[in-house]
Length: 389
Image (tube, rainbow, N blue to C red):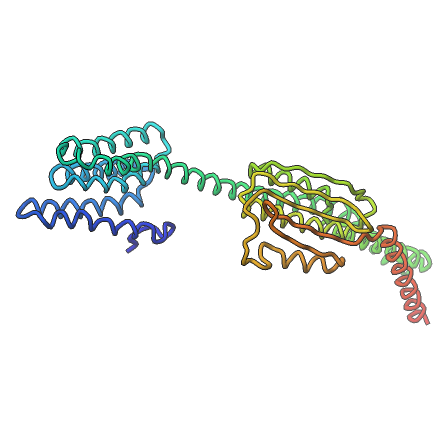
């Protein structure tokens, strides 16, 4: 049997400690009054448990008003100090999303607290300065709880929205890949199939043409392989401008104001470098949204002294002092090692992340690729000569 929902943790059990207060008052009574008092306390505990499981149902209203009525009865007929139990229904009143129901419950709670004070005016007047702050606190606590729960609900909705966005992005990416495969490889593979059938028919009748068609199949298959490589590169590589747009959308969804300062010409930056820096930007911005509690985030990318400098700062609570390499820093370091980059962080009126990467001209990178292609073609030629001999 589940006593309280697991999602609330130990919080419901902690509140049960305060049930000993009415018990201590009821024990002083005798006869039927004591028996009825204990019965009311038991019913109060039952209502407390039931309210955790009945949110949004008509039974929730019933048990909430039963709980407040018990407080009224205990405060009037046993001891006016029972009005402290008003903190229990105050928590549940904050669960109302309907403002009309919320106000009605607040009004009834006020009646349940004020009535015993009116009944015991002679006793209360000497301690009014002591009791008044608690009276105000009980009536204001539903508003505080309501604000806290609404914030938690909005954060949950934001997380769900982000998950839905991620799913939509994945779905769109799968559709794009399917379209690319159909439009490129589908046509090429159909052509290879037709030419293969043609070679089979020409093998006995026209050997020379069959050889020519076989070479054409080889060229077509190499073209197909090249198309596959291009598709893989498109799937793996994210450019910095694309990631900046993603970061902007994420920060806007989290209601964090942002600005981007870009003083770099991306056309000469290799795709590998852009992809790694894009992943670092994504990790940093995700941390800002999840952990920083910031109101503003700035991203600055510049190129100085032969290196790209990426700076991401926010005005949040900064990095935890004892968190040496948390929040994805280790992952960033591992990625940046590939391109000889470095990452540093510090707290400077918020979190401050600074990444540097040496500039390698895209032309140089392509030159190296051309050399590799020449070497690969030389190797293929040697292999062909070997098998021909």
